[in-house]
Structures are given as structure tokens and as C-alpha cells.
Length: 360
Image 1: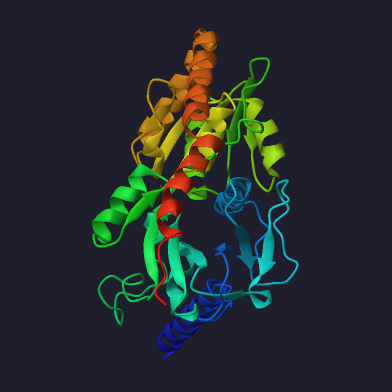
Image 2: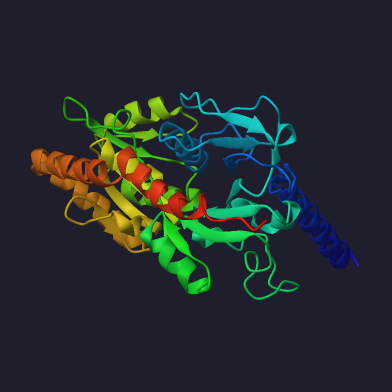
């Protein structure tokens, strides 16, 4: 009897948690008017979330670059007056209740809203901005949904946009009938760049990412004395500028990326001149190059510990070599993940979808 009661309680809590998650994944939904005329606007839907998030930062950056290139765009929030302010911006933002969209407008919808796409106006033109293909089906149950959910059964979807070659390949495999386009991530070189002087004996890490595995790794390294003389620097809850400053002070960065669309933390660490060791998170395979960093096979904790020790020992024996590798990584990130490249990517995408003829 007690066991049955506990199971019922757990089931109730599970349903409650699922309901709360679905509420969080409800997109800002504007009114739709088929008779609305005038030039179209590209609206990037965004959660009202002010915690540091590379995904939301990308939404704001897309809108900035589109507007600076002469294409009208805005971030669309649910709450009037809301703006993410953990990074400096004067991005055009508006609220769903304050606008009406028509046939010429385009809604750019993060994959986060997949379970609630049906809440958006059916006739509205939509482009899914999938920043993490590994989360495409989160909160989308297999039972009770049709083949190709959540995208094929949502009217108005014209294409999928993603952030890495790794994710594009997965999306093309899953949705072979949909156009999948790529818009690179930007690592701002004005914010993330190597230090003027070599970094100190500090190891940067983001403690909330794969926290249990991090604890295991740090225990192993400490037990072997590998951390002696090194300072561990947790990076959590900082602004974009504070994160960059902290990364510049770290000679080594531990990557605990997991099933990522791209994996901004290790890319930002590389751009800041740190030598990165750890998991690629799959999406990070786009830029983890063993010539200037140390990728570790997914989930291989022993290999991770050995690789970190090897990097620390290398720093002891030939610090200039590790610094040189960090600078090579920074140059690679700067050369590929820059604003002009993203501006060109967006121009290519929206040349097709912004100007597509809309049926009368």
C-alpha cells in the first residue's frame, strides 16, 4: 500500500513538472491578420529569461545584424518592456501583445518552443531556429504524436535554421523534406580575445555543466596531486564581459559540453587564449581541433583525467607551447565565427525566405 502511494505521488509530481515545463515552453504569440499589408518584419521569438544564455544572445545578435543590414527585425518577448540585459545591447524588442503579423512577416521560432508550436497562428510564416538539434524532441512525446513531429504537423514552417554543421547533418537526416540552413555562431572578438600577458596557473570551468562528472574528475586530479599549484576558477552567473575577463586569466579551460548545438563556452575560452581540454558536446566537433586543443571522447572520464594531467605537465615543461596553442585556437575562432560571416549567412537565408512570394 505504501509503495503504491509513493508511486502515485511520484507520478503526480512528474505530471506537475511536465505541465510547468510546457508552460515555460509556450511561445509569445502575436495576433494574425491576413489583410495586413506593408513590408514584412522578421520576429525572433524569445523567452522572458534574463539569465546568461548563449541561445538568447544569438537571437539578439541576429536581430541587430539584420537591422544594421537594412532588414527590419525585432526580438519578440511575451512581457511588455522585457529586455535581456546581462550583456550590453540596444536591440529592437517588442511584446507579442503589441503587434499584429501578416502574410509578409516571418516568425523565427527557437526549437525550445517545439511542444507548443500549435499555439502560434497557423497561417503565419515560420522558420524554426534550432540551436540544439539534440533537444529537438524535448517534451514532444513519441506516443500520441505523428511522424515528423514537431515540425511536419505545424503549418507554415518554411525551413530550419541551425548553428553548426554537426546539427545541420542531424536535422537533415531527421527531416529530409525540409530545407536546413546554417547561420554560424559569433564569438565577439571585441569581448573575447587573448590577454596581453600569458595567463596565470588557473583552470577555468563551469560548475553546473555535467556537475557530477566534474566532481568525479576534480576528485581524481586532486587525489593524484595534479592540481597542486593550480587555482580552480568556477565561472557561473557572470555577465558576458565578466566571463571574458575571467577566461583571459585562465591558462586552461575544462569543457563539459553535453549534446550541444554548438558549445559556446569552449569556443569563448579558445577565443580568450585558453588551452581547452574536454568534451566536444558533439556540436563542438565543428571547431575542436587537436592541433590546438585536447578533445576527449564523450563520457571517457579516465581519458579526461589523463589528458588534463598531460596538459598541466606540458605547461610545467614548456609553457610557451601551451600558450602558442591557445593563441592558434583564438585565431581559428576569430577567423570563422565573426559578425561579418554571420551577416552573410543571414543575408543568404533571408534572401530566400523574406522575399518569397506570399499567396494572396
